[in-house]
Image: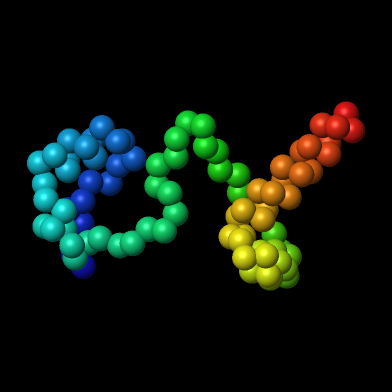
Length: 89
């Protein structure tokens, strides 16, 4: 098995130093597409929501019917719930 030559770090500074002295084309065989954000701004936060498979399927059906992303639908519902909770407090 081939060992990766890519740095295994979350440090933006270390990664910047590495890529300042290396070419991306030298590592094409080690690269993979990532669809999710890798680095988030400080103003962004991520929360994990655990759902039973049937509930997740329902979220996906509703989101698809509305033409939006699953995460956007969940975000909308959470914000609506927060607004309701704050108004009732």
